[in-house]
Each structure stands twice: as structure tokens, then as C-alpha cells.
Amino acid sequence: MITAGCDIGSLTAKAVILQDDRIRSFAVTPAGPKPARSAEEVMAAALKSAELALSDLEYVVGTGYGRARIPFVNSLESEITCHAKGIRHLLPETRFVIDIGGQDAKAIRLALDGKVERYLYNDKCASGSGRFLEIMAEALETPLEEMGAVGSESTEKLGISNQCVIFAETEVISLVNEGKKIPDIVAALHRALAKRVAAMAGSLGIVETVAMTGGVAKNSGVFKALAETLGVPVKSPDALDPQLMGALGAALIARESVSKT
Amino acid sequence: MKQNSSKNGSIVAGCDVGSLTSKAVIFDGKRILSQKIIRSKPRPEESARNVMGDALALAGLSPEQIEYCVGTGYGREKIPFVNETVSEIRCHARGAKWLLPTAETVIDIGGQDCKTMKINRDGEVERFMTNDKCASGTGRFLEVMARTLGIGIDELGSHTRLAKSPVTLAAACAVWAQADVVQYLNNGVSVEDIGAGINTAMASRVAILVNALKPEGDILMTGGVARNQGVVSTLEKLVGRKIKKTRKADPQLAGAIGAACIAFMKTQNKGAEK
Image (tube, rainbow over all chains, first blue to last red; front, top):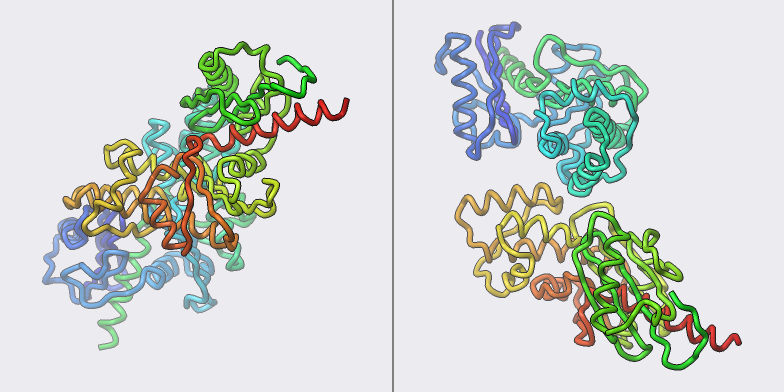
């Protein structure tokens, strides 16, 4: 049985193709302004690496903020449900998911059986999202994907007093002008983002095991800072890119839908 | 600066060193003898020296002729020549009272914050609310948006009047609003329609602070954003009351004027003590 999940986010599009329980292929591509186009591109990439055609897919579930525009789906599912489903497949002991994406952050508390108990998300303020790091990386002229490594070289503990991205950007530029080292500033930014998201997560009541997903989970600096701020260990789905949890969950739901019929 | 106890003919100064602009006013208790607004320098002491130097030159005065000087604004602790520093809230309240003696509610939108306050008959603060945590609802929001539109910040004001079908910005956050603006521009929406949406987003944010204060009496708006007619007219609708402006002086000078008023009161009290 071949099923697929397609997650159209604000910054990236993701697709996962399952053959029964096994991940046959996946793809992550940058999302353009048109969700339909992004969906077609990312699914074409995943199909290509699996050497399959669209007609080979028995069932496709769409998710993500652009899900309503995906042309080839059989049904749609919320991001929260898909993320929970995806992470539990790879880390079955997960009771709490913290997902930091390009434009939002989500905290999801799961029951023992994996059902979503409560969740919160912030998409109102950029300071708790991946966009925060993106803007700061630009200001520091450091590639976004190198931020984690750069921050790990920090030797001096600095603080960022502004929460607002716009004000924090000015603060970062002042720190650079004062001669502060880039690794120290980057590490401070990682702690600032972790603190912001941890405050939201904490209000739900943290239950172990905690897993971090979303594109920002690839940044080891934020990952470590989040565990430190929460005071509990945080896990990551080592088997698969943490950005793909939504698409994986969608593909798993697609498989269940076929099994039921 | 010189201290002397002459009760009459005292000349005083107020200096307001803000995040984006620095202001200085030379005052004789009745009239503003000179005023100056400059863009703030990275170092507050430099901003203060420059703006006060310019104001003194305009009035044809030397620093020794200033009897008392009050400093305010976020950089106030770094101003080298003041006799005293006073909080921005107190200075703005006092300045608003001088600009509009009937004012009971004051809205001041600065480059990096928004203050709303209720003041009593003596120009003292009774209640206030501020936002300096989030760029949305501050002058910074308009600055970022104007830059994104590729226009000067002063051009935004007329857009609310000129717009044919104003856009709605989905989020208050300046970062998300900026992304919205870029998208509208890419879709070929007119600059006026986008500008009107920016003014509405700005006014909505400020209205939350104003309404939380339960405004009464005459409302005076000060700070640079008071010159943006689009924000003012939208805010009037959201608050349900007229907002007054002042022609007595540039509304950006309210803090410096208040500082000068407090300085003048000091010289008078000093005389009375003797």
C-alpha cells in the first residue's frame, strides 16, 4: 500500500511517501507564493526519488497552512493532529511536542494513547518563531543553517533584553557595534527564542517525554537552550528530518484511511 | 549651567533625548525662545550637546544664560549639562498641559514606544499605560512599513484619505505586517491602499491602550505620529472621540517643553524659598 502526506507551510513544502509502514521517500522544497504550485513541486520531488507516479498513490492527506489549495489530496487534516501522529510514530513515548516553524510555534500535550489533549500556538508575534532567527541571521550576516554551530563557540554569556524582533534586531546591531563576538550574540539569541517558546509550552503543563520538531529543531543551539530552560530532557526524531513530522503524520493518517475502507 | 536666584526673566531649557530624535527647547516661562529637533546620534551625550548647541545658537544665547535645565527621554541619564532629570511620562504630561490647557487625556507616540495618560488640572499624571515592548503601535512600525513601501514616513499620512479600497493587514506584528505589505505590492495593489491599511493597523493597536484608560475630556495627541492624519482620523473612529492637536508648537516637542516647564517652576520655587 502506498500513501503520502503533503505539508504546505509558510516557508517550506514537505512530502512523505509511505510504503505500508516504511518511509519510502521524502522531500523538502522552499514554498513559493502559490501553495498549489509548491505542493506539486514537492510531491514531484518525493515521487521522483521513490520512482513512482502520482497515480501510484492510493491516498494523500494534506496539511499545513496552505492545505486547502493542494490539488491532489483525498482529505485534509489539521497540523496539530499530523504533528502528533508523526512524532509518535518515531518516538512512541512522546507526551509533549514543541514545534517551532518558520512562522509559528506550537506546543501540543498528548495523552498516553497519543491523542491530542491540549495545545497552544503563537502565530501572532514573530518573536517566538523561526522568522526571529532568520532575521537575526541576516543582520549578523551568518547563514541560518550555521547558527547552531556558530553559537556553540560562545564564551561570554550575553542577554537580549528586547523580545520584539524589530527591537531585538536593533539591539543585536548595537551589540555588534560594541564589539561583542558573533558566537556570543548568536547563543544569546538561541536562549531568547527558547525562553519565549518555553513560556508558552510551560503554560500547558509539561509532561515527559518532550520532543522538539519543526525546522528550528535542526538548530542545536535552540534545541539545547530549550532543554535547559524547561529543565527536562528534550528528544528529537533522529530517524527523520524534524521538519517532516507533519507530512509523516499526514501520510500515516492516509494509510489508516485506506485500511478502514 | 549657571544657577541664579533671580525670579524674573529666568531663561530655562528642556532637553529630550529620544531613541530616534533629540529635542531641545529654550523657554522663558511664557514663550518658546527657540527649538530644535535632530536625529539622535548613537551616543546620547553627543545628541544632547548637538541639539542644545543648535537651540542656543538659534536663540542667540550662551549656555551660561540658561538658569536651569531639565533632561528627559530614554537617554536622559547621559546628558552632561542638566541640573535634573525627570521621567518622560511626567514631562509629556506637563508639556501636553502647556500645549493644550484643557487636555485631560494624552496620547504620545514616540519612535519606540506609545504612552497614554490621564492628567489632572495641574498637569500631573493620574494614570498611564505604555507599550515599549512591541514595535507595533509605535513610530517604529510606521518607519518599517514606509521603508518597505519605499516612501518617506510623512507620505503615509495622506493615504487614508486617498485610498480607494484600503487593504487589511492580517497581523499586528511588524514582521508579519511587513510580509503582508510585500505581498500586496507584488500583487500590484496601490501604495495608497496599502498605506491606508498600515495607518489602520497602527491606530487599532494604539486604540487598545487608549480605550483601556477610559479617556475623558479633551484628548491631545503628541509625538511625531500626531502629524499622520490617517492614523489620527482612524484612531478617532476607534476611540469614538475627537482628538485635538496643537498649533502652539511641533507635537514632537511635548517632552522637551514639559521638561522646560518643570525647569521654569524650579527657578520660581528657588526664588520663593529665599
